[in-house]
Amino acid sequence: MTPTLKLWIGGEEVASAGGRLGDVFDPALGQVVRRVHFAGREDVARAVAAAEAALPGWRDTPPLRRARILMRFRELLEAHRDELARLVTEEHGKTLPDAAGSVQRGLEVVEFATGIPHLLKGELSEDVAKGVSCHSLRQPVGVCAGITPFNFPAMVPMWMFPVALACGNTFVLKPSEKVPSTSLRLASLLGEAGLPPGVLNVVPGDAEAVGALLAHPGVSAVSFVGSTPVARHVYETAAKAGKRVQALGGAKNHAVVLPDADLDLAADALIGAGYGSAGERCMAISAVVAVGAAAEPLVARLRDRAAALRVGAGTRAGVEMGPLITAAHRERVRGLIAAGIAEGAVPVLDGRALRVEEPTAGFFLGPTLLDRVTTSMSVYREEIFGPVLIVLRVGSLDEAIALVNANPYGNGTAVFTGSGYAAQRFEREVQVGMVGVNVAIPVPMAFFSFGGWKQSLFGDLHVHGAEGVKFYTRTKTVTTRWPEPSAATAASLAMPTLG
Image 1 (cartoon, rainbow, N blue to C red):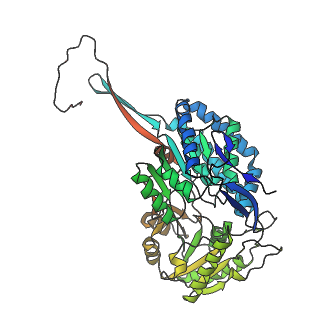
Image 2: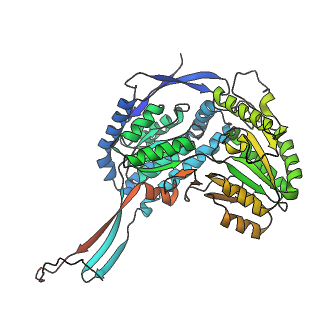
Image 3: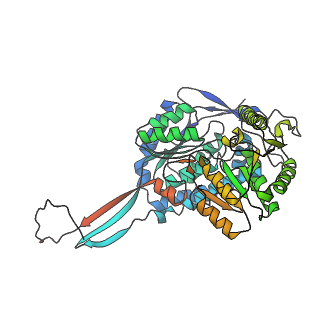
């Protein structure tokens, strides 16, 4: 029988009230491997109620004790790393090494969160006026919600809830219904680590669950990662309801390659950044901007390397790229490739004709390389989210920077060069939130913060790192006077001045 997954509410597995179920596929096989209960409005209300009930006790738990639970959780993540990677691969399709790397990146945020007690310290100023002191506190915001995408079932949830929990909040996680197993397993591991029931709740589901979280008055803050149209909707809807929001949207990440770059290093990096995880990464490089004489030799290197990539089931040894998440998404990417070629892009490598080694009905698409793309083409204007690398040609660094800055997205970018001057100028002038210099995927470490600019981020604060702590806490400032018992006082209606 096909296994069925339930919701995780109040520290236990529960069926959805409405009984709605969805299919969970193994994209490499093209087959249903399990089913999952979809949370509806009633289920979201139950999860928020559980989080509200758990909030006073968890908020009042000393930060060091909260951190110790996360320390035990981190040890369990280490012990179950292979299991979690297999779940990611089975439901998303990425290769096992890629999945293990994403689990590691999530684990590093947990490591950062164990040190958050240090960052919760306030400030104190004595004698801001005669006998008056002033100090500040960082306090949790309350019940927080996270809405996470299909492409990183372990990493992106762990960008959110460990930081929120360490700050004293409770949490309701709505993972993608396409990849629910990893989030549910993380919740059970947290329970083993000693997390009290109701502090973390997991409600897989579709748009109904998202809408319920955005509207629920008990939710104080919402974190989201997904496409730009949905990010904008989440931001506008939740902010209108008075919630704090960070909504990370889509991307069109550029890599600028100058003629003085090490082209072999650049090509190797771009193959990994463009085709890793079948291009289903918000930090994937999808647009290569070749400057001047770099274009011809760079395209030749990319072609040779991409053509040699081994595509197949992510569980097989030696496979470098797995399938796309669904058949519908594969057809969308195929359609964008066809449109790009029709609009004048040169197909250096066309992955639509791929035949994988093993017989399978999986959702595979081969690496595709399109040259001489222009900014008017649909393959440039749209976020493809697939194994498609496009090459645009420009004549100078000035043109490259202008091209990147004209794009409505501003998530990540990179420059490959041997010139310190060019690199410094690029990092200073480019209007993008995360920049790599001879690094194709500049995903910050957990103690920095992750987030883009322009239509890649709605809200003021990025995820994890110090900005994550700011997002999941509110500042309270306290001004204190302890007068001498015998001191004379008199009422005054004038604006108080303490200096």
